[in-house]
Image (cartoon, rainbow, N blue to C red; front, side, top):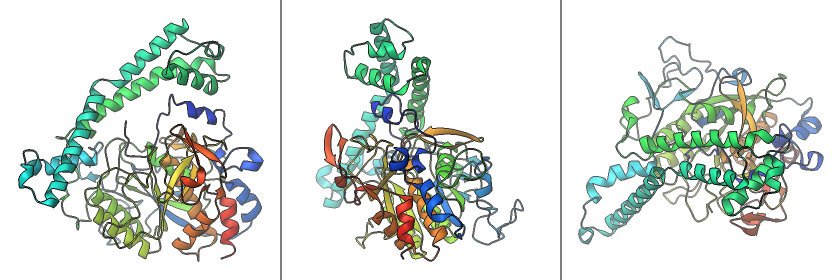
Length: 521
């Protein structure tokens, strides 16, 4: 099941998750040598390099589903627009956005918010259908013929995904689970039962290994957790059928803009939390949850403000116009780092996003983007948005593309889901079982390149906070040149390849190394 946000919300029952069972709290910020987990040495940097040093506040834009701005561990670091008077229904700072006190929501209107969306390719099918559904291919120009075949390819993809959703894959997995328990002759097996059981197929083998490694000392959770997982999975598939894969579903009337007008910027509302802020809240906490308040978690950066800008969803794809406007909004309102933990396989209008990226780069903004959770080679499979400009004018100089790594330094260091690419993915960062803020002042674990990306964005903010004279391009250079190199093979699709072949730097980001290097500039 595809999620536009780069989050493995429920990573059950993947065998490789066993590598992070019983992890130390805050593992992603710990040190490999000292703590035996492949964190990024943030705590070491604070202890040995930053104590007593002056620093400035850095504004980080979280372009996402929204952020719970009242979370106990985030509310003190949520950006407040100093030029805006709350609730007076006047655009006090004359930036085109009325009452944008804490950011902006490009998915809202006067009567509410868009909660669900279709995938981008479904919208493209809807756009192209009048022209190509019954087209005579022999009468099409060369350019039209290319579009025609793209249309047919997208239709095939849609029919395949609809078929997969309609056969209720969770139901089939549920039957597999029931068969496993029947074969074990135990409805609530313990770890010892799994150790003594000989699996009959790959599904059973994965489940047995997962249970043995994941539920040490907590025997009672396996079956009940799996049942809960299936309930959520069924709900997600129903949402795909109702919204993401529904060619007739179009919620844009809620926003009230003219989506075909790329030059339209001033629409939306100021509800920066939105209807489901789980993903954005988790991302924001990784970047900058308060480190010294003795509650919750520790973000990477100790002096940031978080600017929420809402453009995307769990299920369904973000729209290019919204992404472009979000990037421009962040740049115009002082963001020095932009976190973008989302992506998609198709693009309606790449140029409008490219133009916004160029604008942000011109204003010395560093953009950090997730590589995706498809375990895809990004040198072969394009992912949007990306740093390569469609007009052949080059690529964004202040852009970092991020893959996700796990806690254990070994052949499974690359997260099983993470996309990769020796050319188009720059670095890897911790992205498996990351504990962070969730709505209503709660906390939880999530996995995904969505979680790895704010590790890098947080590091960028940390560098810019202590070394504010450095440019965005210099900060990128420092992060890439200070990685901990991984000098061994990792497993991808059951094959071992050098880590140096899966990203440009061949390593994992490291805060301690980066700050030492920054001091030399």
